[in-house]
Image (cartoon, rainbow, N blue to C red; front, side, top):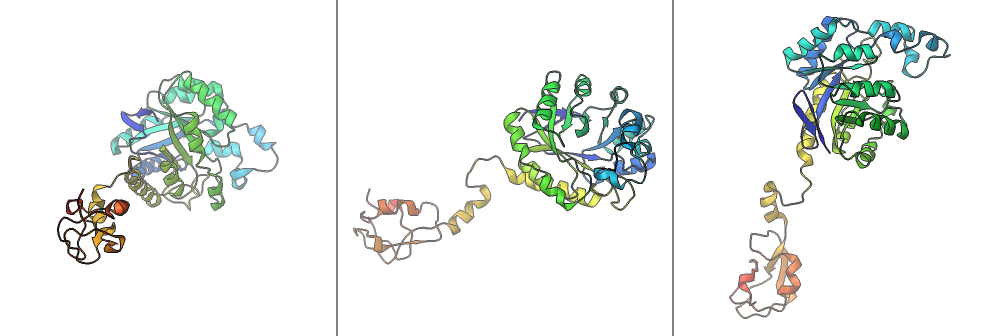
Length: 356
């Protein structure tokens, strides 16, 4: 796996997982609330607070959704029209410098997902990285426009076919090598059933197809399980939605992580990262005493005089196994040798006690 840099921080296989708290629409249209969530995300050990910059007329067709028929997916529970909801949860561009400043004040990275060309250009002076949502994975024109800014790109791949992913990755990499490829399941219903669709092993597929890319997870489940699995499979960027209260009204609160669950997720991940190690099998430093008391060695079953020709019946295989003792795999090599001095019953048989 390669590495990328976000705000000067190295991200890759040998570095800690980078956690992105997607505040998204959970600001509920209130700038002060957005700033509060930034502070809570920092306290919960997130590395970045992410927002979404869209303009309703440039992301959804009012006509299209009104004539789609019945409401579908997570939008079926929305009280307002899709267009009105996007209008309500869009954020003013006046917020951007304020949000950036607040993130800097509390010590957390700021960035956003832009959903139109103007938003890309607006954000460019304020962000060190761009996130592309799953819904835009087939909009190659936009992918290349964002890639052309020369900054790292996080690409979510929810509800995408293998061909969609291949074309998107190739289109970005032609322009910009700094890509994080993120497995994602695009379902915002907060149903426990969603876990069986997360399909974390796609990360293994991505690793085989794109061995030089940093991998990530963009996830909409409400617990740490998917994060821990993804990190174990090689993901080093994790994005989840963030709120302070899962019971608030709004499209993103129900499936978001809250400060308590987010902090737990990060702390468990840090333990997992330490536990993953380097893949080299060895007797670890903290096992050295356990090796002595847990493993077996060859011991005299009874007192053995000097010059005794050892037989199998003379030997016990017992714990402990102090340094210098003969281990069980050498049993056949010991049988048939003579002792060169007396060995007390129960004592360790050593090579220095036997004729060579």
